[in-house]
Image 1 (cartoon, rainbow over the protein chains, first blue to last red):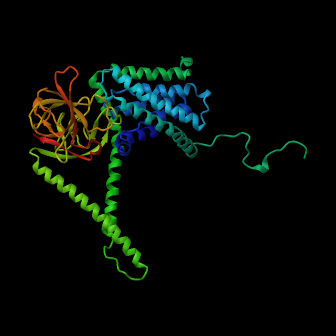
Image 2 (image 1 turned 120 degrees about the vertical axis):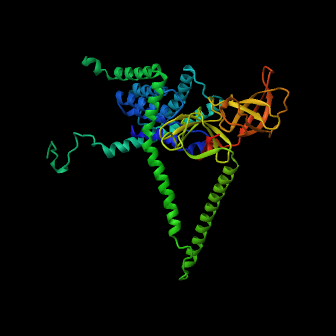
Image 3 (image 1 turned 180 degrees about the horizontal axis):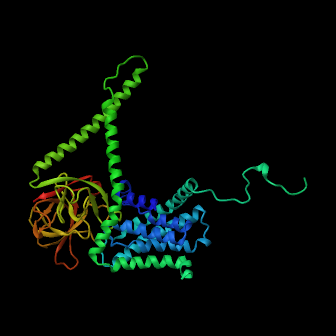
Length: 175
Length: 278
């Protein structure tokens, strides 16, 4: 949640990428893909709701509009993650690209459905493709950061086969 | 009952769909207040970011003021030290000269502008690329309380937009070029009136807008100045908007349209002026 909060804040208040690229990248789909790969159902839906509400509160979008596209991205990954090689870099990259392309398109479609008139054009398509690539790169990065934070702040996983002291391990067999 | 809650996936999907449905059917006033309340959650982060920036700037200046500008040349090894001090001084000199020029320009333009203005800082932008809005660090909390639809101009007096939402500590400004920011403008030379609208096609350059509904018998040339007309009450008269880039006759042949490049660089706004009295 802190990561989502910081990401939304940076997207609104840090203009560096806008000056370099000419547009502001939206990496929240990558965050939801990571959530879908690692977290439970409740956490994915909470992440989608909070990220979507935070994004819309800093934007001219109707409140709640971004929740559904982000939820769809995270939920789709969550539903099929047993069939995905979720630790593989390539798989994460392609999932990020797919989410980075699909979420803005869904957001624009919903905006037009509710009667808003966002600025659209063929240059938006170029922006969407570049954003998708950036999301593809961001998913493995977010995944590594999540594993690092998990290692720092969580208890280590219990390994029943590992003894704390090698000398105390009972070895059965001849001699 | 327990079995229902054990189906956590169904619960999660249901919760999200219910939330989205409730938000969409909510009355507009309630939704606006809720949006403002959720946006207020970022104020602590904004304060920390602003304080951090100010601290970094003051640390930078502290380093300069503490340094002895004339280090004593004591030994042979001091030669390179003196050279690096001169280089640092030159860099600092260039920085101060640039800041001096910006402040002089701002003071000079302030004398030329016929309205009473107040400087505010830009602290954020709409994260989505299909809206053009910026956030400024003034709301209803200080003496100069901002009001809805107050015009915003750049430090040099060029049109930037108008206030679209006012909060207690921050306010949103709708930039020229946003689909919701339309106003009447005229060609300064011929005084022909038209309307500034957002470009039909999304453009990565936020400085390009369209001037439409110009009469067909008016000569529109590249380089012509465009200013606000004062009609409709959105903006006062004669605020510089931009320059004509090119023009064409509309598809139905009833009017002429022109592409206008704004004077203000909307991607690099750091400080803007609010027209307090106009």
